[in-house]
Amino acid sequence: MCSKHSCHWLKRSEFERRKGAGNKRSMKAIVRSGEVPGILAYDGETTVGWCAVGPRESYPVLDRSRILKPVDDKAVWSVVCFFIRKEYRDRGFSVRLLKAAADHVRRMGGTILEGYPTEPRKGRMAAAFAWTGLASAFRKAGFREVARRSDTRPIMRFHIPRPKR
Image 1 (cartoon, one colour):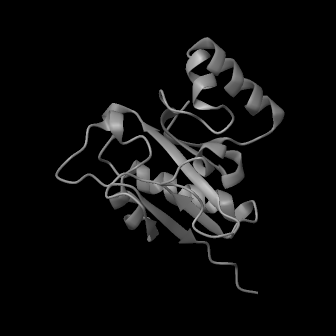
Image 2 (spheres, rainbow, N blue to C red):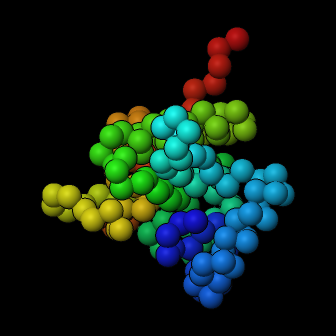
Image 3 (tube, rainbow, N blue to C red):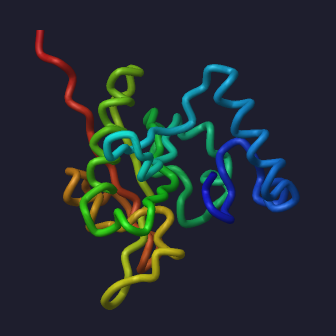
């Protein structure tokens, strides 16, 4: 799940009411339905990270945000949250997850992947506040800033190249 924050299939208030077992059941139901709510990173057999990715319309909370409202009317997929196990942080897993998310979106027919990372004003940021990812990781993965309505929250995009014929 996306920590204590709202995930795409629930409003924030509903997510808070269903904390713990209720949200776990919801996630299992989504996976059983065949929907792919995100991707996982592994180190051998160990799951070390998670990235939530899906079509932007799957995340209605974005449209209700004055900071994260749509930039334009283009069809985009969105990366909305990350989790990296503590012992695997600062080892490039966020960048790898972003590149894997772009591959997933390409396979699903998408052409634009968008993210809403945090850009700390000074120095490091506590991991608890970096659940949307850091702008530096997005840049390393090839994303470019397309809008900024807040000092610390750029909207970044990766344009997925189409295969050459």
